[in-house]
Length: 156
Image 1 (tube, rainbow, N blue to C red):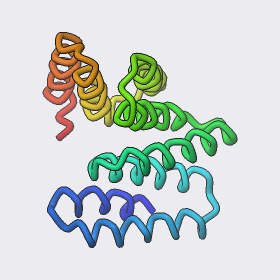
Image 2 (cartoon, rainbow, N blue to C red):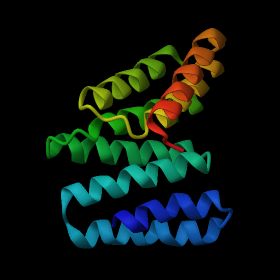
Image 3 (tube, rainbow, N blue to C red):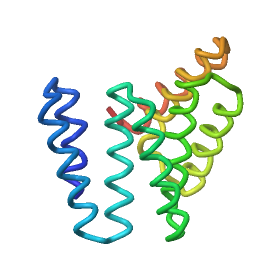
Image 4 (cartoon, helix red, strand yellow):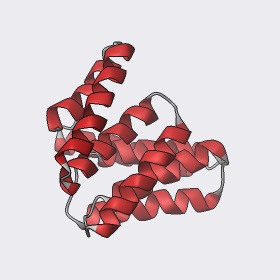
């Protein structure tokens, strides 16, 4: 599951859109077959990331809702990543300050677990959302923070 999920993003970033789509279907199939909530949640996170990279906010929102529901039901910390993705997806459809707050809340919950992985990515989503609402200084601050974490954590 983990390899297939990560492959969806790698293939997309390398320019192999169809292979990425095929791999995403594999992730979705495995998620259903395994019937393990942790594996399913992991697959949903990466499906959300892939849909976000494809600039498909409706798919991100649907995936985020599934992730939030599953993570809430099983008391998993990945509900926070669902909130980040949902905040971005909603903001893409209708820019509103409340979407920034959902994104920030999710990011704060994510970091409260001690997680640092994917924080620069989430800050990038926050910056994009802030920019869309005309909050340029906030967006620049989010980008600056993300870049400083990239240097510290060596996350690329």
